[in-house]
Every structure is written in C-alpha cells, then in structure tokens.
Length: 342
Image (cartoon, rainbow, N blue to C red; front, top):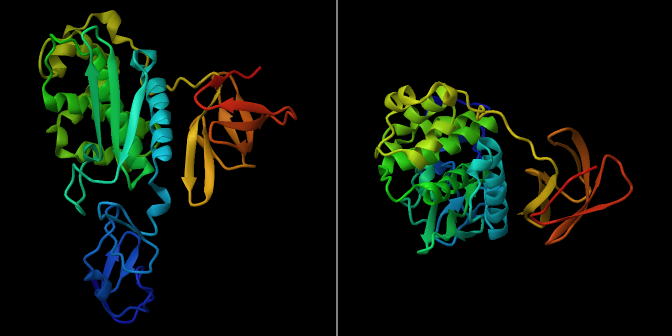
C-alpha cells in the first residue's frame, strides 16, 4: 500500500482515477481503496474481481480475472493437448529411457479443487494427481487429473510432475521402498528441468521455494547439476535406500557412469507432429511440435537436422493441413502421428 496525493494511477479493477489517498499496488496495476475491500479474488493472481469486469467463475466457485483467463486451461481438449506435448518434451529432455512402457494415459480435467483451500495459493503439486493400476502380470493403466482454471505455464509444470509419477510407478521395483518426500522431489525435478528449458526462471524459483518436498528438491537439483538426471532415474530402478543420499550415491558410482548425456541438451524431433488443439474463445489453434498455429499462420519449427517453415492451412478435429518451406503440395498431419519430411 502507498499513500499519495493526486497521482496518475487509475484503478486496474474499476478504472477510477486519478487516485488519491491510499493506493494498493498489485503486479497488474494500482487498486483503489474501495476495490481492495472486495473479498472475491482471482485464484491465480489475487486481483479483486467484480461484476461486469470480464472475469469468469469455475464450477467450484473459483474466480479467474480477465487478465488470466486468456491463458487459463479451461477445456478437456486443452488439457489433453498440453499433457501430450509435455510428455513429448520431457522424453526429449531425459531421453527414450523416460518413455512409458504403457503409453496410454487417461487425462481428466476437474473443476473441483480437491487439493487446495479455495482462493488460497498453493504449491504446484496441488493442481494435479496421478495414479497407476497394475495387474498381476505387470500391465499398467495410467490416469492423470489436472485442475481447470490454472495457467498454461503452471499446468505444464504440473503435467511434467504427474508424468514422472507414472514413470516411477512403472519403473520402481516392489523391493525398493522410497520415502514420499523423495518421490515428490524427483517429480518436481522434472518440472524444474522443463521450466529451465522453457526459460521460465520464475517458475523454477517457485518450485525450489515450495515446501512440499521438505527441501529435497534442492538436493536433487544439486545432484543433477553434478552428474545428470540419469543418476536419479537409475536410483529409482536399482537403489535400495528409502531416501536419496546424494553424497553416498555419487561417491559410489563407477567412473564411466559419470559421463551421462547432459539433460540440458534437447533431442529435437526428426519430423513434425500434430499433438492436439487449443481453444481461445471462438478461435482454435493447432499444436505442432509444441508450437501453436492459427489457421493461415506461418512459423519456423526446428527439427533434428534442419529448420522448416510451416504454414497451417486448415484445422480439423483429427488432423491439420499444412504447407512446408513454400511447397504448393499440402501435407495432412493426423493427430498423434509424426511425419518425416524429405
């Protein structure tokens, strides 16, 4: 809060101004004394919301302000496309060893916030849940639940975290009992790494400061920097201790194992892939290699051995029609299939 005489500040909520007297400062702008008293708040940024200001309300009573709603994940199609692209990104990040043996994952979007107190900011882990059912012969059935009404950046971190739970569920032997905080720290490490690759340091800071893992995420980040995520993944598969002892584990590794492929090096895809759709109002966008395209839009996509200019001509539910490098011959991309370019 600041006190001032007449200023050039206008209330970001009601538009009143220039403001005098007490001025409440929010990252999005100034708030007048009257609007600061409003109890209804955006659950993403904390901005007061009032009737007619363009905000929306979720099924369980959470508010999303007019600024955050354009980047909020609100539909099941958006959530599925986001999870599938995040899965591709973290497998690229860690290598093929991080792919699931049973790749089918049921993604569900819930309006009801089961994990956080309504209106209160919470850790990233509270915005999702993952579960795996195993049959006697070892077959796995996976499900991920994501909370609606969070930003894409937040839910990408959540999707990376929950995907790691599924990988651990498949790869942790029954004989290896792992402490709960350590499991969550391994999952947060994936989210942290992906946020680093996407150059989102504020999200990385939020993950490190989250008390959810009792500080164990910081230990794993240090291990990753010293030797790569392979150490952590191998420990899940072959370790015996309940808690990851960084010093003991690193000192016990043979010398050849200390030269992993750096997790920071992205393995770019060889072809182009239509992952899914995102909807923003009446506009639909197609996600191709992690890049969002509106119909008629042209962008550059980086592949393993080249970069290509892709123009999206048509967007359908199950496929998109594109042109690449100016070729007049259209190419149809079926959802979920990767196509190599000559």
